Length: 315
Image (tube, rainbow, N blue to C red; front, top):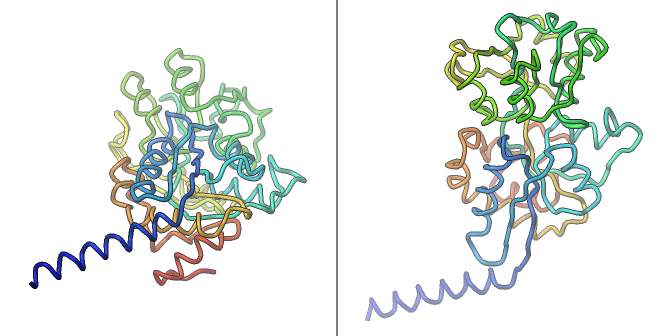
């Protein structure tokens, strides 16, 4: 009798869960980045994790990363996207590449992990000022990487007139180094970055180490940067810790997204966080307790609802 009653209770509980999830049905696309970065593998794992239960179907899509993703979200052409905290700040406030065109409908979902400024250089270059007169990959046109490069050089009193600026994505930076066509390249991504892992297996290169005085200058002028360290041995041939700035990768959406969809997405993402963390080393930095830290646009009400439920302070 006890076993029969327990079985009935279990069946009723399962039916309750299925009824609750079947009452909710939605599909969302997650804009990530190119296959050489970290957005793509983490976004794919995220889509799979939030789709484990019925009711919400998420699909990860390759995209042109932070700036392009931000414009797509603001135009309401996609539901959710990866971005950078600095890009979101510039977009929301109408600054830098969004000058005079503030995108006030942007909303944030979660802070994820640090995206590290990696300035890869030939072995004879040891500082950013050594780049005068050199050929430098500064990021894809209008990208978050390019915005970060511009901000860092501005802090140093340098402009693109001081060197031969090439607007290259991560794979292009790697390929140009292999062909001895550039002296330096900016890559802003989670560590390790596949394009740099590929490069360092075939080419002897270095990474710029930002000394404390330079780091203090950059942080004072650009509050969205945080100090970070690339551990020794992350890339072949780079055997010392590298101190460098970083920005937070974040998830964004727009104000018209229904509260229940973003609530369900946020809830499922964090309840299946282990699946996402298994996809890439950087995903281990995604934590519920830091999900609202460093966000640079208003939090979406659906995400705020979930955080309040689990006791996370919402500003």
